[in-house]
Image (cartoon, rainbow, N blue to C red; front, side, top):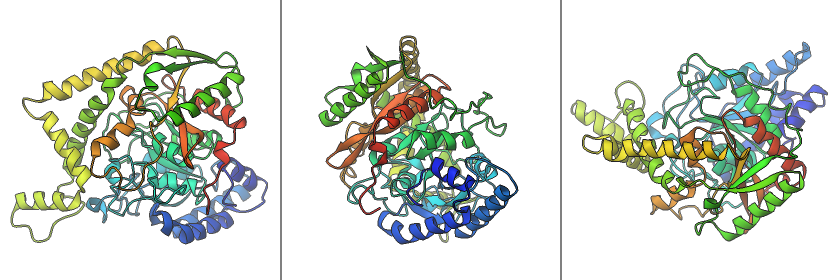
Length: 483
């Protein structure tokens, strides 16, 4: 059962080959047995899962149908879940039980999805390795000595290890696509505003976006269908009709114009990954796609712009965690200032503190124009580059990451080296574009991803291309040894 995709589970439940309750029990037992190796879960929700599974079975018995009805998933632990710990991977929120469900959680529950638990993550979604979590690092099931990527590493490791078929995740600078690449999964960051951020604990509000992590593009289409849509509670949610993402999966790629930016193939890219990307291009050409070289001239400025904007927004968003209203509070404070200082100093880990300080500096008097304003101007230039490119091509293709997953602890002493691993993914967040990573092969036994980018609200096109590619390759079917 654990090897089934979401689509296969939907068919099995519809054909009454098994019940949601039976499947849920199998997967909960598997998580209990195998997750100690991975540390991919922060909280298991057995009682809730069995309750939801029984309810889903009853709904099916009454004639209701739906691809997510009875399907087991997990939520990244920054989606608020009513009455369940929502920690954001931080000591600051270790004791926080959300009083309501995030819109994504509520929508998926209404569709009949079964919540198995909350997955581990980099603290407040800040990181590229899932090593900054207060609950310990997550391990990559393909090699337990390597990182699974971040910040959605818990969701990625759990799905890759076949502990469950799919999970929710979030992407601020690549935190869905990069873990997908590192763990041989398909991960989709939707257009900014496509999926509600209400009830999703914020890192950088103008960049954060929720999306699906699964083994196939078909499964991502199913999960995104349940997640997407306008939400009046979210002022950044866009009132745009949600298409049937599964309906366009079978479309032909004949004549599809794929742009390959020359800037992607620089000295920083591992040549073995470059070769795998070229192999992916050849596969898509066989399917009728037309390849064109393009240029994204301002890509070189994206990392410095991102690492000004994101920490600036984080310093503002995380100011609410002060030891007064909720979250961690220090013992016996001498006065209010001592309460603030020690509560935040004890509650936040080193990476979060680093980004708060960078952000506060960039927003301070005398530096706002020099750093934050300039970064926002670069952001506009990056977006303009993409708009010009999409006048010539339908999608953009390139590597998801410049290197395969690194060893645990290898970049801890050099945070900038970890930041540079986001070079291919952050541009989509700066521009608000949809992006997808899909499996493209292996280097030294570690998975590699190819990234696809599309114009706004063209998630269906990305899923279509990825699905057609997966019908003609088998990278996505490979399973890590021991799982």
